[in-house]
Length: 190
Image (tube, rainbow, N blue to C red; front, side, top):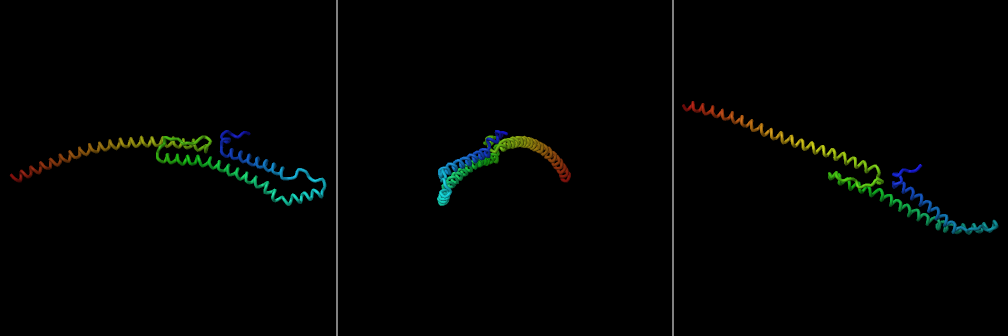
């Protein structure tokens, strides 16, 4: 079963492959060191072999450090390099998303996320869908605001027209009342 193309591009696939290579290289280095450190031939008799074993036991701690210290340092450096690489592959897209969200927060929906397909794979299409939905909603809100402004102006002009008619009616009543008062005053003077 072959891994999918998306999985092969993922950071975790690369990390696993690199970790396997580090372990394999460590095993090869250990084998080479063991080949040169230990004797290649055993003595022919049991007594001589026992003496050789005692000599070997005396230097075992030194040889252990000679074997395991370089391997441990090599593995440690490999793990640090792999973790740095993996951290960079995770942090860089997250930083780009953080900067992009600041742009979206300012209300600019014309830009698209600066992510590639392999970076946080499902996030890029979802962000594009989110931006499209917000653009549609924003345009519908702008249209609704424009309609409301038109209606508000229309209502304002109607109110002004009605206010003029009401004032005219009140002025007519006031003029008639004034004429009646003038007539009454004329009758009183007469």
